[in-house]
Image 1 (tube, one colour):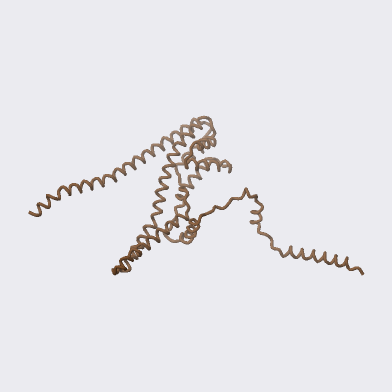
Image 2 (cartoon, rainbow, N blue to C red):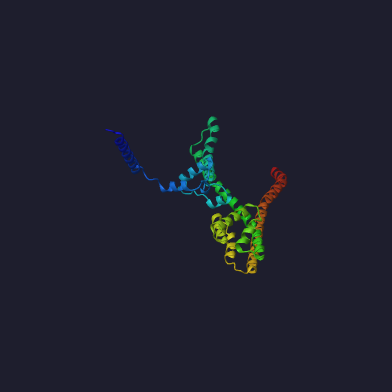
Amino acid sequence: MNLLPVVVSGGTVGAGLALLVRELLTPQPALGPALERSIPADLTVPEPEWDREERWGRWLLARLERLPGVRVPATDLALLGQGSGQFMLKKTALSALGLLGPAIATIPWIIAGISLPLYVPAGAGLLAAALLFLIPDLAVRDQAKRAREEFAHALSAYLDLVALKRAADAGPAQALEKAATVGEGWPFLYLQGALRRARLEKIPPYQALTELSAQYGLPVLDDIADIMRGSATDGAAVYKALRARSAALNAELLAAQATEANAASEKMTAPGALLAVLVMLLMAFPAVIRMLTL
């Protein structure tokens, strides 16, 4: 009896059953990773790579943001191009330095045999830690204020450029994009990026400017967005509105600069008055001493 056909048939049936059982027992792949693998490599959006300081800072932020008084100025940091992790790491490092500084400063006193109460370095450390914890917030707020002033100055020139492009019968979107390509500073780069994204996403350019204003806290952008939103086919009317807003913005900037200059001048009068008082005391000192010694 020839057993070869029986063995081949049995092996084929067994292999088929094994493959069927294997397919039934194999879990179905997750849809998300499968779709990610199917996307071409040039279309995938890479995740931002953080350096070591940013990773440590975000780890601290995830654990400290629930505490009262811990606040991250996300809008100001985004405007300045700084990471929230580095900001929190800087705050934590300064606070730790202020907390340990008074305790380290008491070591020479202890070596010299002078004992201080425990509450003195502890209280001084807590006070220094609280003050140093707020210093990065004040620094970021001042830098963001200066950056918004610089953006306002750039926007004044941008308004004039848009008005000129609009007066030359350019469309609203075309006028905004062409005027943004003239400048090379960071305000114009922000405008170029917002308008480029509006063109790619097929959204109105004034909507992109409004979103840029909300993202970075730039209220001066809302005016030009409102003007371009209400722009009609009459380029002259838009030209007049843009030039009027540019003139008003220049007046506001000049008034702010005058106020700042007056404040700086008032601050300089105090040292001058103190110096005059010291000179008068030095001049009167010999006469007063002679009168007292008689």
